Length: 429
Ligand code: ATP
Ligand code: MG
Image 1: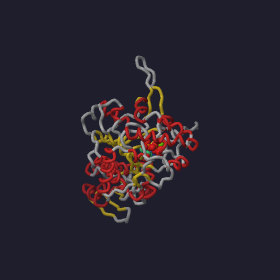
Image 2 (image 1 turned 30 degrees about the vertical axis):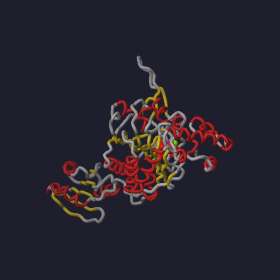
Image 3 (image 1 turned 60 degrees about the vertical axis):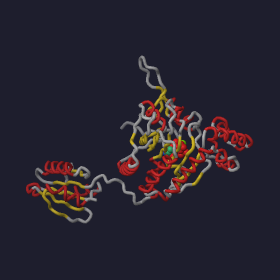
Image 4 (image 1 turned 90 degrees about the horizontal axis):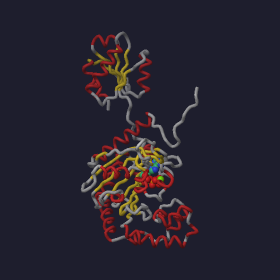
């Protein structure tokens, strides 16, 4: 035997027992987001590296140390370009929106779902390939749509049975000018306490001082209790925008805490920022994070257009659902299992299964292969979790009938093959 090759560190296989849960979760979140009239957009996994540098910012963890970046292959007559495996979905979405004319002078409500790549230290809820579901809205500047995005996510939590285990943190980071004034005050404060800052914070103090606010260093966090707060520097319009958002949330009964340290570091983010956090997943507590980025479209070469969105980590969501909602049912792989034994019964079984699929396409019907006596075949039906067995012997085939056995209570009934699909539908919930 030759040496086994293993998967890439931090990149998971999702086996059938996992995908059964993922499919249910994805069905729910897609149905909900589409119930608000949002449409799916799919963009490539690879983009030109400068897109992420500009959209995410040079002085961020993601761009500084987490991106999978490499040069494209050389080909005659083509310039060699630097490519990056997308670490998040917003940049590609905005790039596509500008390039394909979806954004200029239009409203768009978009969602995406797909794998993202970041070279981080793998741990529970943190992987090198992970999945995000996100939504982005373009062309609407009011706090009403910010509220809608939050309402949409709150509906997800209800449908997934995790409402009691997530809380909403909210903040506003105001306008560019307000932040410029605030940054000055913050840097002045940090300069006075330089000795208490770690290396990352010292570096960011000048390049991207707002990022110091979300430092994970406990000492730095303690120091920040005495720092000036952004709320005191807010411009009047942002203040009103935020009051509007809070009023909408109050009205629809969505609770939140205002966290003045919740920030986005980059200039084109503004006003609303929010995070849904949980204490049920250890250190990886943020399930969903979003906010307004009215300057991003212009930053990426489009006409100035307001934008707001969020991204949710699916691995963390699935872990949370499994940790706190024991009622959550994974999709069943097999509803009914078709067993057969005797001369000519295998082909009869395969034909019967086809006619049942014609009329009942949503039924998950598995046909037995590889022979075996009835006992063996029933054991396979159990192994696959089937609720019902369909049984064909030579007598049934001759009579155009089939035995339908409810494996949950052992009751069985002989029905005409033409009636089998309708009868099955009454048994399977
Ligand atoms: P964190 O502070 O946990 O590193 P982040 O600020 O880097 O999060 P965002 O870029 O805002 O995260 O991504 C949005 C969401 O995507 C996160 O809230 C999280 O649920 C998920 N996410 C981010 N990075 C990872 C990862 N490496 N593995 C799994 N999920 C992730
Ligand atoms: Mg991160």
